[in-house]
Image 1 (cartoon, rainbow, N blue to C red):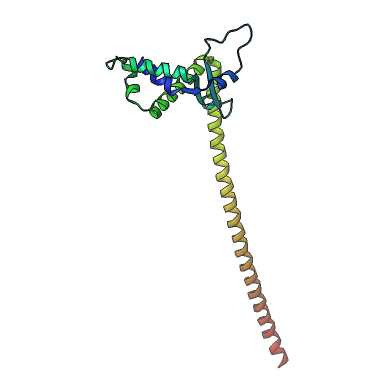
Image 2: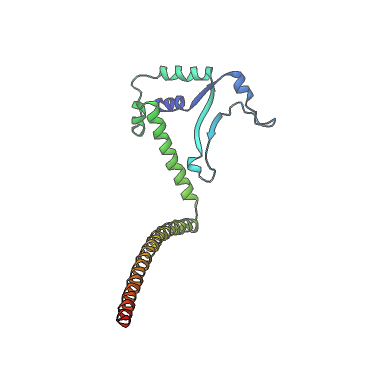
Length: 190
């Protein structure tokens, strides 16, 4: 079909005979004559399978690519495309890549979720709830620490003010006592 032909070109990498020959065989007992060889580029963390595969390509010889191109050219112009693939016929390569990637991620997620037991799903939900609760607790602690630092600074300033006032009061009292002492001693001298 026309859609599969477009997808074939999108996900293929043309290689030479020597490059194809460098790819190891399956073994003596198994023939890889009809095997498809792939190039898979991975990245990231194996614990996150949805982001692990960066790219995926079928490896084909240039002769096979020419055969595929000739086949697509041989299809009549009025080839019927199924409704679910109508969009692919008009999309460019990047749009198709994006669409296929999103569909693959969705399918992988569905497959992973359908293979999980109810107990595992419940454990995941509990873990998500715990993570959210911990986030809230961390935010509360951050707020308390900010308030603690603010309260500490306010207490420090208040103590400074009280110390200054106590100092001024003490000086004023000493001045008063000195005045009193002077006034008490002055009449005795006369």
